[in-house]
Amino acid sequence: MAQSQSLAHKVRTAVTMGPRRQLLVAEASARMAVARISLAIYPFRRLAKGFGAFVPPNDPRVLASAANAADDHARAAREIGWAVRTAAPWMPFRSVCLQQAMAAHAMLKRRGVASVMHFGAGKSAEKPIDAHAWLDAAGVKVTGYPVASNLSEIGCFVPTLSRESSVGPARQS
Image (tube, helix red, strand yellow):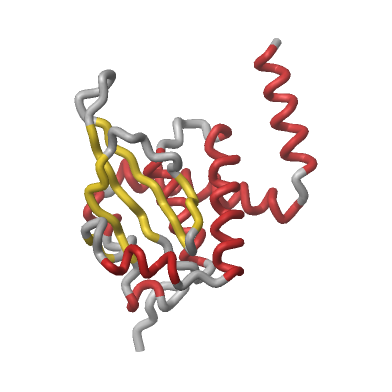
């Protein structure tokens, strides 16, 4: 009975959230599906080329990306984070942190908002190694928060000027 009440609540929420938010959730769902398929087909190193430059967590570009945040970029980051968190439980597969971070990164990049994708790892009592990905943009914690205290940040993908300055794919003359 509790499961049907939960489903009814989800359907009611989806119907009442309005068309703009429905489209945002649909986009988040599509982006998470693309991330899932991409991770199954391509090696991560190939996908990582689209995320930016991989740098250590203490690189000045990591802090600089949050410092130069416009209000409209922060609003977009909050809305996209909400959409990804809302869509994730509805996916027909278990949408893990990396897929969520990739989806939010793609959605933000499409809107011209730079983001930083963080990667961490650690040990826990349940797992010999635990890995996690999280994303922030414009000073907003977008996906993957809170980060477990047993994780140590390994590195981040930060925007590169050539990739983040254009919203679409590069055109050849």
